Image (cartoon, rainbow, N blue to C red; front, top):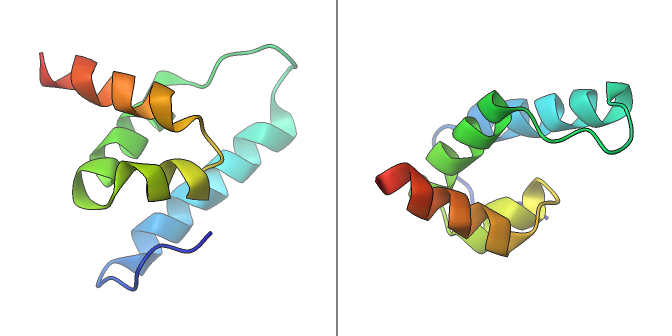
Length: 72
């Protein structure tokens, strides 16, 4: 899933690449690192959260939950 064209498309692609690297190296059952969650939340504040979740292959509900927690 591609996001709408943006000025900083490199940031989106860089985060997708970080997810791919993490998924290739991770141990099954290991949770997503907090720094990846934080970067994803920042991206989801600029673009529709459902689109970001789909691009990162995350559960949109979990992303929205994290976004709500980040506001507090």
